[in-house]
Image (cartoon, rainbow, N blue to C red; front, side, top):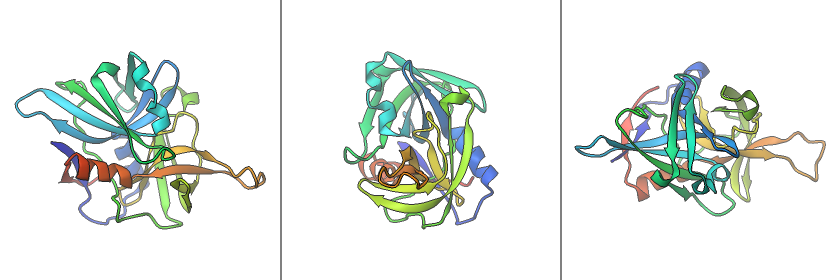
Amino acid sequence: MLMMSESINNKRYEWWDVAEKLARQSFQLRRESSLGTAFMASQAFEHKSKNRHYCFATAWHVIDDILEDQKFILFRHHDKLAVSCSTDRIMTARLGPEAFDLGFFFFRTRDNLLPPEQMMPVRGLKTFPSLGEDLGWYGYPGSLESTPIFCRGTLASFKTKPHCYLINGIAYPGMSGSAIADQFGWVIGVVSEWWEDPNLPKIPGMLQAAPSAMIRHVLEDRLGARILENEL
């Protein structure tokens, strides 16, 4: 049974608490040809078995050709956990239309190779952040090798083609796939790319993010995820 976490109330958390929570479920995805970030979105446990299944969400362009590799590494900085993932034991899935830069990969392991984690809940189809809302994201810039950073910004606008958020904030190569959270402890989006309008070269660019609602939709409606109540 897949499991996700659900917030109990609408308490506003300190940003340090949000960053710490993201640190426990965010990983650097190390491939031979590239680096990216992914975060744990759900976990499952086989009945009467030591097998465990984990679902990671990330930007689709981080994993679109990952099955061509033999293996990749999931690395978590705060406890220096490094898990070698053979690609013959994973399955990838694209979420939404072609322009929607969002995807899953499912990883099966045994014992405590990748311990279970309490996860931040993912906002669903009926709840969206408000314009001007403060947001934060946690990822692994490639220029810093294996050191993550936590960034903050504000939701500036909604883009319709493709449907995405534009955020006044920064992100660096390697942070694609990072979870974006609000101060209430919800994951609301996934870092996609840096967006600039070529027709307005003097206007600063913004961070483009895919909304997380599709993640929740797939986990609940298609995979039957069971929601667990959990606080930060």
